[in-house]
Every structure is written in C-alpha cells, then in structure tokens.
Image (cartoon, rainbow, N blue to C red; front, side):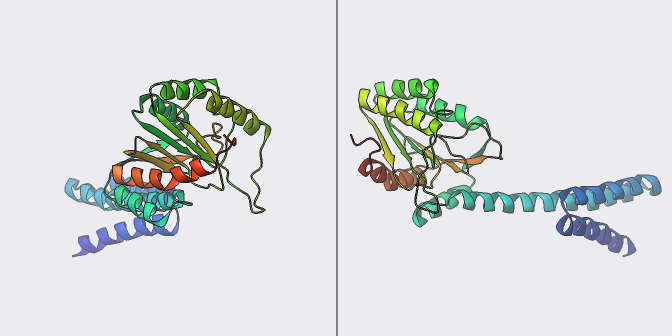
Length: 253
C-alpha cells in the first residue's frame, strides 16, 4: 500500500505543479521526479512505475488542457457568426472533422483553395489591405473567375464609433478589387459591418479563426484557424453571408 500512496503523491505533486503553476512548472516537477527516481531507486519495475506516475500525469493533464484551450480558441473564433452556424461548426469540430492552420500558412492556403475551387469561394474578413490583395491574389482570383467560379468577398468591420477606417493599404486594395469587379463577371464584393473571418470553398469546406484573410500577412500575433470539412456547416455559413455581400455592394455596381 505504501507504494500506491507514494505513486499517488508523485502524481498529485506533478498535477498540482501544472494546474496551480504552469506547463513549464509541471514539466519541471516531472523532471525532478525523474532525476530522483534514477538516483535513488535501483529496482527497475518500481523506477518505471514512478516515471510513469510523473510523466503519465503530466501528459494526461497536458492533453486535457490543450483540448480545452483549443475549444476556447475555436469558440472565440466564431465571434460574429449566427448562432445556428456556430452550432454546426462546433458540432463538426467536436466530431473531429478539422485540421489546424497557423500563421503564415494562411495566405498560401487561401490562394491554393481559390485556384482549386470548382464552383464558389467566399472570403469574409474584417479588413482589406494590399499586403494580401496583391498582384498574385488578383491574378489567382481572375483565373478562378474565368473558370466559372463564383467569388464572394465581404468586409467592413466597424470600430466602437461605427466607422470603418480606410487606410492607404486598404485604398490600394479596394482599387484593385474595383478594377477586377468592373472587368470580370461572377465576383461580388460587399462592404458591411462584418466581424466574421472565414473562407468557404465550394460550400463543402469552411475555415474560421482569428485570421483576417484579406489584410494580415505580418503575423505579429499568433493566428490560428480551423479547417472544417463539413458541407452542412460550410453551406450554412455561405447561405447566411452571401445575401449580405450581394445586398451591400462595395462599389455601387
């Protein structure tokens, strides 16, 4: 029984260090138990049991907290979405139908998806900038339009004063978009109070997160999005957002 009580103490101390301290402190506690075990215990099975008590506890708590943290980040990423859309997206994520997309991967991923789209692309972003809406973006989008792909772009996040501030990079981006709209068919650009950040491809894949798709390439802060392969969730976001884009044309066309 003493062995069991001792292992519970090892696990308890490691858990307390993680939960009431930090992940680093928890790893430090498990590391100290490792050094103590290797220095003191000569009986192999007991040493293995103690290492398992320390590191098993650490990794179990680490996995649990990571899952909870990820869920919290995901729910925060759904700010601005309709409640029924949120429900569909959370359900799809909980069923494991997602992968993660981080930081600088966003720009290339977006262009790849536009290039591979068969029927439609929707991009929802708070802001626009020529850092993203550059010559490569315009060319890729124009090629998609020439294949018959419908493109929907929505932006226009307003600050607490109800104003959408248009910076010089935004003005240059809007000039490029307006030129594209006037020269191509099949593209709709809407400007309205939009806080959603999403990429919807062919109504079967939706990518949502903290990333402003059409303005951010600096990645001074950590950006993470969730790629969800679920046609019901993707179609719901598309059907609820496309009317807002079409009824609020950015260029009065």
